[in-house]
Length: 94
Image 1 (spheres, helix red, strand yellow):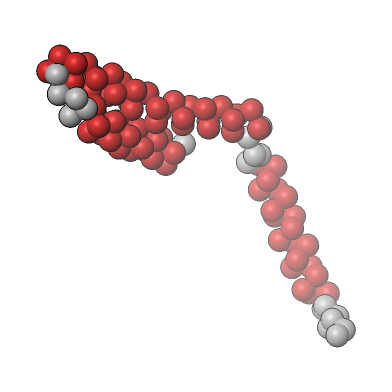
Image 2 (cartoon, rainbow, N blue to C red):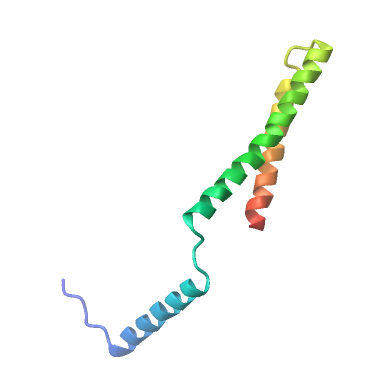
């Protein structure tokens, strides 16, 4: 199972592509790990905050109207949908 030898033109093309990838990497470097972790943290808060706000609102309505969890359960689902939608937009904007 010997590999066929490459022609010099193939090697030159491979080297040119590698050099182009290197230039592209230097022009647009990868963000540091701390920036990525910060983005993950922001993304978590974007999802959690609407859920918590609507959870408190639903609990308050249930307490005020004495309805058990009639408003709390849908409020959690609406908050989750709202938070996920906000996170989706934030991810595609960044």
